[in-house]
Length: 513
Image 1 (cartoon, helix red, strand yellow):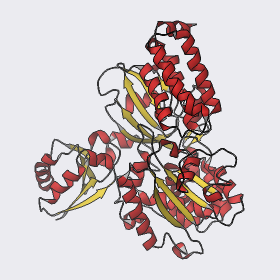
Image 2 (spheres, rainbow, N blue to C red; image 1 turned 60 degrees about the vertical axis):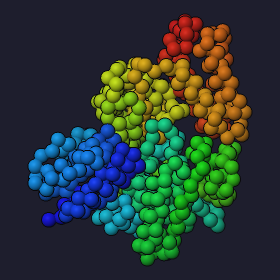
Image 3 (cartoon, one colour; image 1 turned 90 degrees about the vertical axis):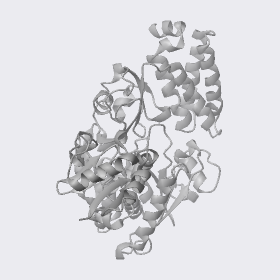
Image 4 (tube, helix red, strand yellow; image 1 turned 180 degrees about the vertical axis):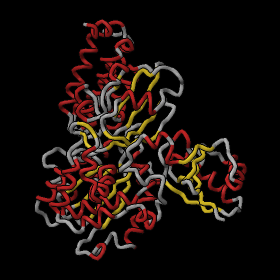
C-alpha cells in the first residue's frame, strides 16, 4: 500500500531542511507518495511531516534528514516514534485558532487547482458570478472586512469608491510587498494557498469592473513568486482567468510584478509608481488611488490577506465573518509571532484576544526563559508595549487608544536583556535608510533623530535633547507624506515613555514629572 506523506515547500520550512527531508524520503524507494504543501504555521516544529492515516493526518516534527529511515520504518510498521505529535487537526496550536483565511494553508497542494477546488475553492467566485457589482460589495461591507495591510480601512468602502468612479479601464493591485520585521503571513498564503489570492482578486475585478490585475511581490520572496506564477498559469488553463471566465461575459487577467527591495514601496502610491516603471516615490494625496491610481485609472489596492479573505466572505460567510471579532475590528487576524519566543508561527484568531494571551499562552513566553520586557506590534514602525499593557485587546481601536498600531499583525517579543534606547535609535535609522526622500520631515527628521538619540545615549544635555527628539517625532508624525515617516515616532516615543531607564537618569526624572 502506498503511503501518502505531506512535506511543506514553504520557505520557512525549506530554510530548516524540508527539501532535504523530502529528498531523503524519495531516496528510500519505498511505496510512498510525497505531496509538497504549504506550512501550517507551527514554525518551531518545522520541518513538520504529516502522514495520511484512517484517523486523519498524523504529524511528526521537527524532522531532520537523519530521522527519515527510522521514521519511515515506524510509519510502515505502525509503530510509535519519538517525533510523533499526534493527529494534526487535534494539535492545541491549531484547535485554539479560528482559521478562515488560512483554512487550506498546509492542507492542500498549492500547485494543484483540483486540490483547491476539492477544498471548497472557487465557491466564492461561482456565487459572485451570479451577483451584481452592488451585491458583491454589499457582502464585503456586511463582513466588516478592513484592510489587513496596516491602515485598517474598510474594504467595502474602497471597492464602492472604485466601482462608482467612471473610467474606460480599472485595475486591481495586490500589495504583496511584505516588508515588516516579524511578518510572514502574505508569504505563507502565497506559497501555501495561491489560488485563494487569485480568486479574491478576480472577485474584486467583478465588483468594480476591472479586467486586469497585478500582484506586486517583493524580490526577497522567490518561492512566493514561483508559486503565484504557477497558480496563475493553472487558473488560466482552467478558464478561471482570461477571457470569459467560467463561461461568463467577464474577463480578468493577472500578472506578477517583482519589486526591487524598497521598503517604501509597501506604501500604496510608491507601489503604483514602481508598477509604472518609475522610482518608488510617495505620491501626494489627493487624488486617491481609488480615483486616479495605476496609469491614472481607478484602482483597488488591497493587501494579500484582505484579498485572500474575500472568497470565504463571498461563499456565504459574510455574516459569519462579521460575527467574529470585537468593536469595529471584525473577523479574524492572522497574527505572526516572532522574536524571542518558544512557539513562533502564524496564529489566526478573532480580534479581541489580549496581547498577554498571545505572548504568554500562545507563544509560551521567551525561548531564553528570561522575563518578557517588551513586545513590538506592527512591524519596525510599531510601538513597544511593556507588560503593564498586556491587557490590551488585539483590535485596531484598542491599540490606537494606547498609542499603538496593529499594522500587518506582526509581533516581535524581547526579553529583559534588550536595550530600548538602541531600539529607538534603530527605528530612526531604519526610516533614514528607507525614506524615499520626497518629504523633508521623513528625510531630514529621521537623520536628525538618529543624531539626537546618540546624544541622549552619550548623556549630552539629556533633558534638552529629549525635548528636541519629542518635537522631531511630532513633526514627522503630522508632517510626513506617508506612514513611513508618520509612524516612525511610535517605536521611538513608546520606548522613551515606557522604558526611560534606558535613556539615562535625566530622562528618567523627566518621565516621572
